[in-house]
Image 1 (tube, rainbow over the protein chains, first blue to last red):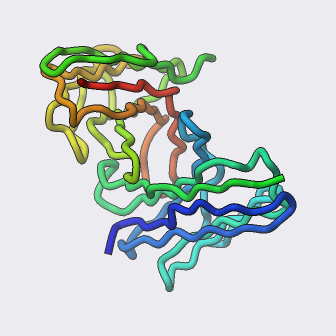
Image 2: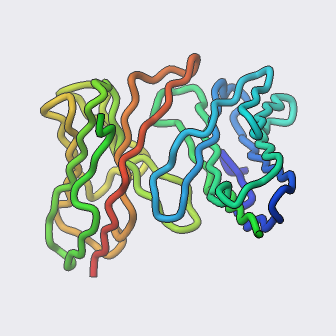
Length: 111
Length: 116
């Protein structure tokens, strides 16, 4: 099993739709997680951290499921500007060199 | 604040040539990192630094060297470029690193390197 797995997509959704991505991780001792957004040919930027209790930021909701070892990102009321690649990042124990980025899930919001 | 800047933005090298990529940050961050990003693969850590004068190897360090003589700068060197080093290189920095609480990484705009 890969350390971090994401469906690369693309996910093509109409404007206004709700879309969800999952990211599975293999190290059960991992304690912190992030979602980053990367626009085409640009640098990744932090979208949100993922907390045990789940967290919400406007139209975006992140959840952590420790039992099944995955994190999720839910986007409600999709906008054209949400089109991007969403990277999941997992911090397992063992030092910074163990931080693992997923390959990203590409989202395309269609008018 | 400019955040994290990288120079150059684009470069084409011939096999065997050398070059240095420069990363600078103005956020007084202790930690700095160099990654490469290739199609179908996640960002992979090349080298990182936990403070001025320190460097450490990441996941894919072969063929690269780094130096951090000043806190704000982190240099990535390719001594003898190979086509396998064709990639997009991102520099990043963070205030610190712990598992809990986690610290955000700030990325530079990237350098697109082609080795022919």
